Amino acid sequence: MPKISLRNLEKRFGKTVAISGLSCEIQSGELFVVVGPTACGKTTLLRLIAGLLRPDRGEILFDGRRMNEVPPPQRGVRMVFQGQDYALFPHLAIYHERRWSNLSFPLKLRGKTWEAIREQVGKITGRMGIRKELFPRKPGELSEGQKQRVALGKAVVVPPQVLLLDEPLAHLDPPARVKARKELRRLHEELGTTTVYVTHDLAEAFLLADRVAVMQEGHFVQVGTPSDVREHPASSFIADFVRSYEDSLRQAFSS
Image (cartoon, rainbow, N blue to C red; front, side, top):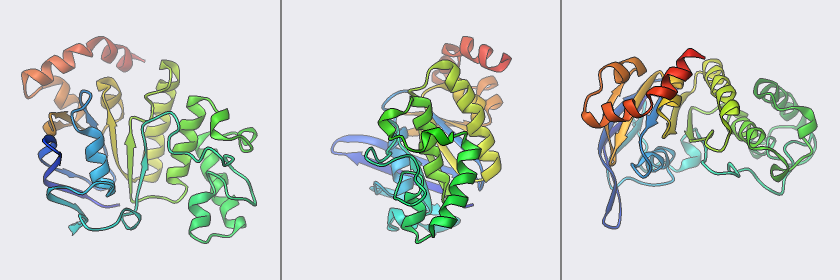
């Protein structure tokens, strides 16, 4: 799994600076969580890593290889988008043994046989807790938690080199989010994929991350382990941010 190097990235949309002078090293196999307020540049950063946007300045490297000009399909990246549809195909079933479906699509696109697809989808659905009775349904017939599981399953049914997650739990109710966080952490430990996870929820970041990057106005203002950021905030902005989540942090770490 690649180490991701971000070097002095900048991205503008007209006069608006979305990413400004951002540099960081994301280690191979790390679960790296970017946390910050709305409109600080988190989603833009994921889209830059995925190749859906190109930086105006700076470099993105995977294991030292410059990726700026590499098309998205050649990067070995999968992204789970924010939003209620999770980028699932609304007209396709969750899974069908002999037809194109949401879970078979990435495998069939790569020329896999239906038998090989059945074996791989069986592993993923078991790992993600996607029940067989959901297979004939279309995404619009699923709950938010079910759609989230299917979206993650689709993202990892062909094991990615890099997994990008844009607030995938944002639409779940609190009990479902607690369970989903545990499943995400377990999935990451099983796959060992280099993972960049974006959230505005500091408690979620601290519970999931190997390291946390706090983002403000398009750049990282502190990068460290959850305990480093919580116990040694690097600025008053971070201290206030941590303080605003103290109640939810106590609840999260006591559960």
